Structure formats: C-alpha cells, structure tokens
Amino acid sequence: MRSRHLVHTVVSLSVAQSGTYVLLLAIGYQDQAAAPIVSQGQSQPVVDPMVQAMTLTDIVVSATITALLLALTLQISRRHGTVDPDELRALRG
Image 1 (tube, one colour):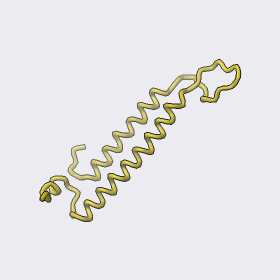
Image 2 (cartoon, rainbow, N blue to C red):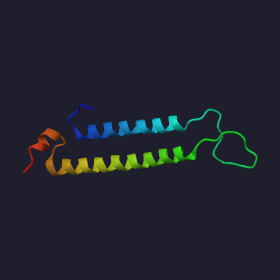
Image 3 (cartoon, one colour):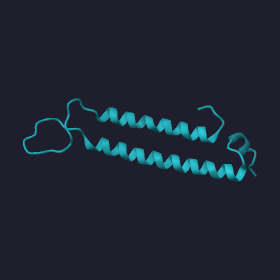
Image 4 (cartoon, rainbow, N blue to C red):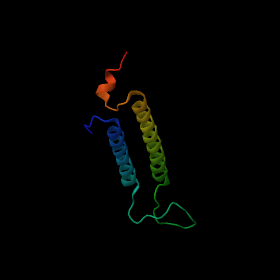
C-alpha cells in the first residue's frame, strides 16, 4: 500500500475491492438452505438471490474499474515516462 508506484496502487485497490465479495458472501450465507427456486409445498429455507446478484455486479464493476485504472496508468507512463506520483506532481504547469 505504501509503494510509490501507480501499478502497485491499482493492484492494492483491487485486493481491497475483493474484500467486498467476502462480505457479501458472508451476509448471504445460510446453513442448509436450498437454491432460490421455489416450488409448491416447499418449507425449506432458501438463499436470498439478491446477494448473489450484488456479488456478481460487484465483480464486474471491480474488473471494469481495475481495467480503467491500469489503462490510465499505461497512458501516464507513455506520455510522461514515469509512474511515480511524486515525479508527476512536478509536471504541474
């Protein structure tokens, strides 16, 4: 996290975003619950499908954000020749 490299920062953000998957799966977990397909006369508890949909949406959004940040880092590297934020700060102008 304390690295002065933009790629390391993007990867660290991606790892932190992965923690939300674990949180959502922990919220949606129910011991001995069935799939959310309800049929006539079913008395067994079912898992909430909304949590699963939110987890899949979170995965897609995280992948998109990571790809966007890595593309931005690549463009910064090509234009300025560095990915160190301290050196980029000196380019203000």
